Amino acid sequence: MVLEIPPEPELRALEGTLSAEGKRFAIVVSRFNAFITERLFLSAYDGLLRSGAKKEDIELIRVPGAFEIPLAARKLAETKKYDAIICLGCLLRGDTAHYDVIVNEVTRGIGQSAQETGVPHAFGVLTCETLEQAIDRAGLKMGNKGFEAALAAVEMASLKHAIGRQLSAVKKEIPRSASNKSKARGSKTKRRN
Image (tube, one colour):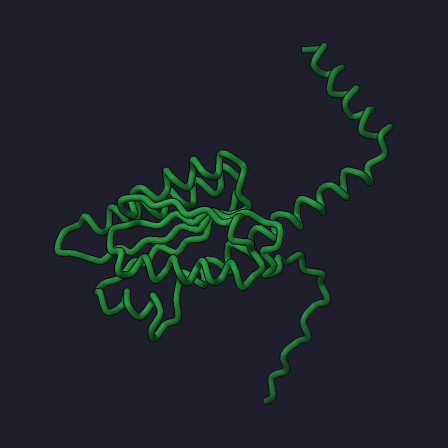
């Protein structure tokens, strides 16, 4: 019996591009485990420049450790000056539960900031069992996760912009009279209550 793979449906996909031209980025970098985080930063910076970002459109923010990344990212996102925030850090497992607590809080904080502010946040925080794993992920065997985070930030900033353009086009297609009628209905409903 031969199984045939069905053809992919022809759907138009809305996707971001890897062009950072005209966009602004903030990179939040933890100083703790600087041996690793500096490699992540340099690679993320390179990724933004290769994608077309200008040096003057990239801001570097340093924080003491990974735990401080979400607050800095949140404050930056709230300014609405940046198209995306890149979060870089490195957490190495120790002999206590401290690692698990910090990993969970950093992950939750970055995700929550992105969702609540609407500004894309790229997650480039390494969570490793050993220093060797961190070194591999910061430029050796496994590529550089800082570079990957930068590309994710560029693509998500582009996608957010594309979604915004699409929503603007939909709003323009709704006739003004239809929009005014729904507003009038809403005001009549309010008067009854």
